[in-house]
Length: 131
Image (cartoon, rainbow, N blue to C red):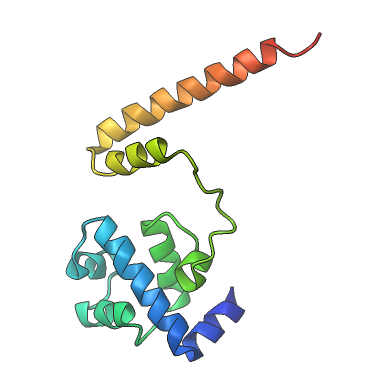
């Protein structure tokens, strides 16, 4: 990761791409730059410089960003999603995106329902195994 970070610090196109990704993710969350700056504990002007590709966050702030946006630091810096398994079912993706805006309790209820279906499916799979 540090090699990617060092390269991104020097490469203007990588910094700009990082800024674009950060802005897109912030907008998806419907956060203002001010809200993101508060969540990161940085000044608004710093957050603006991140999005403009003028500066990269310190490594610890990159980790915080990856946690805020539930992604990897590699994705933030390079756009590479190779570590993540992409979802291919468009309807499922749309529903999951819609759930992002639900209240926490409703999100938890849906997660519990999904977990129950997964457990049921696994149990049925085990019952079908040859004895």
